Length: 353
Image 1 (cartoon, rainbow, N blue to C red):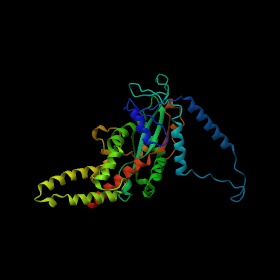
Image 2: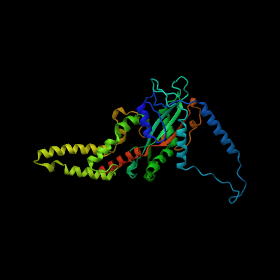
Image 3: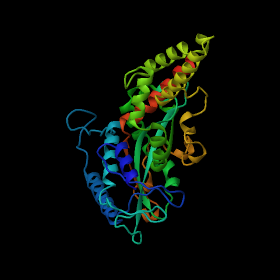
Image 4: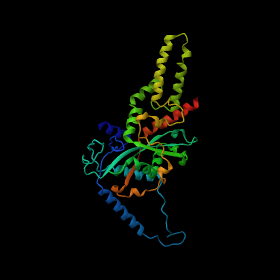
């Protein structure tokens, strides 16, 4: 439990989050909160909407002073900001010392007997499926986290496609704010996917990214600065491959042996910094973790996503009747950058062949 708390704190700046692993029946659940707070919030929203609707537009002609002013739609940045506020508010009132039961469920009180809803954290990824799109997003890149709250009788994973469909504009904006080059991609080419945060921690964050010391050592082996660009890493690797090639040590068995050992170290370092992932057309990101990684959704279809960016009735419904609430928060930029870099490296590898 402590390990999960530590890793989650690394994923999200300034937000506390707690996760537990689970499957279809045992979800990755954070905590529970009273239903009453949602009823109060819904009532307040309804009252505010009613009050707002009672206002009449000032009389006037087709323009000039006194003409009705049409309210502009909120920008993508405004939508994301509002969603971030909801993301954090969903964590309020949930115990920092909640305990897991044998199914992985967690309640605010440490007992699941009176739980009325559950909170599950997911990692959201996107990519562009058009060849002409920026190489940075040619394969999946984790760009956001979501807190999903739903009733205890609901299956969070079954709800997620609808959640992503409703909030995909906020997810896109999170990625674009981290890497503005994403805005050059055709919005129609963007695909979305998700997986439980617990699976991301196990297979991606811990299993792939590793400790910072490993990356520092890899940079030292390749003779580049920490934080070197993909092009610099690629050039350093290529230089070693030429100087350590077996043809350079014909007749020098001792030298060839040392060169082979150094080449293995260089290859490992190159892989640590994002290179050597191959150039196959399939998704490298989706293949990480092998058969043990079973919770990555893969690309969601248009039918699964539904009306893109449109509010859902379930966002207003009572949790016990199938309602849900969800907020988006941008992924820690260093993690997004890691996968953008790997996509660039993969593109460079393909062009060098």
